[in-house]
Image (cartoon, rainbow, N blue to C red; front, side):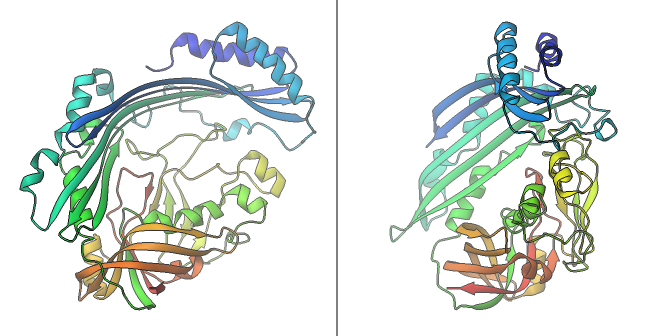
Length: 447
C-alpha cells in the first residue's frame, strides 16, 4: 500500500499548478498510511479496525507571506480549486520575510527510494486477518489464569496487536524529492490483578519494531502480569533525599523535557530553561547524548525532517557540553542563528559507570528507590522544575524490599542530571529514545 506513481505525479502536478497560480515557492508532502488492529479482551477478539488515510499538505510562500494547508481529497480538479483558494488566502496574510524553504545544500540527496534505512518489512504484504488474530490471541495468559501463581487473581486482560505501513513523499520548488517508507508491528497487554484483600493492581507491557520477525510477543502478557503482581502490598516511605534508579521503560520522562527545551520554538519564545546553554558545559562530564537517526532498521530513524533537511548522526550533549539546538529554517532566521534540524529522532544516552543492566545498577548503589513508572505530575519548561508521582520499589542492599506508594519526586532537571551516577546499556529498542536505566544521587522524595 505504498504511494503509487499516479499519486506521486498528482503531487508534482499540484506543485507546478501552485507556481503557475501565484505561489513563489512551494513544498508539498504527500502521505499514505494503513493501520490494521486486533483488540482482545479476556481471551476473545473484542474489536478490529482497518484504517486507510491519505493526505496532501501544502506549504505556500507567496508575496513574502506564508501559509500551510492540507487536504485528504486527492482528486485533481478538487485540489486545483483548493490550491487557488489557498494562494488567495496566503496573500491576505501579514508579510513575514523570514519564511523560506531550506537551502538546497541542506536538503537530503539520498532518500529517493524510501527504504534506504531498511525500515520496510516485505512480510507486511503477507499479513492476513487470520494471522493478525492469532498474533493478538497467541500469547494471552487468560486461558491459563487458573494456573497462575497463587496470591493474586487475574481479573482482566486486554491486549492489542497492530501493524501499519507509512509512506511519505516530500517535494519542493527547489528540486527536493525525499521519500520515507516504514512498517511497524506492535503488541501490548494491560492486565489487572486482585490480591487476597480485594485490592486491584494494573500492569502493562508492549513491544514494537519495523520488522515482524523482531517482535517480542511470547512474554508480553506474562511481563504485564509480573509487573502488576509486583505492586501488591505497597508501603509508605519517609520523605528525604534518596538515590533514585529509573528503569528504561520510563526513563525518557526525565530526558524528554531537556530535549524539548533545546527546541527552537521554546528557545525563541524565551520559554526554555536551556536558553543560552549552547556551547556551555551545564551537565556532568560523563553525560553524552547522541542523535543517531541513521541507525538502520530501528524505530525513529530518519534521513530527513519535515522540511526535507538531511539528518546526520551527531552529539546533542557531549561530555556535559550542549552541542546542538533544534532550529528549523524559520526559527533559526528569527533567532539569527544557523539552522539545524527540527528535532532529534533517534536519541541515545551513552553508558556511564560500567553497568549493563538495571540489576547491575541496583547491586552497585545498594540502597535506593527503583522507579518503574510515573503517575501524573508536571514540569515547567521555563524553569526546569518538576514534580512527578512515582511508582516503584524500596531497594535495600541491592534487593527489592517492597513496593512504595504515594511518593512524589521533585527537583529541577539541571540539578538532577548533574547528579547522574550510572547509565546502563538496557535501552528498549522499541522506543525512539534510547534511554537506558539511569541512577541519580540526592533526589528529593516526598511521601
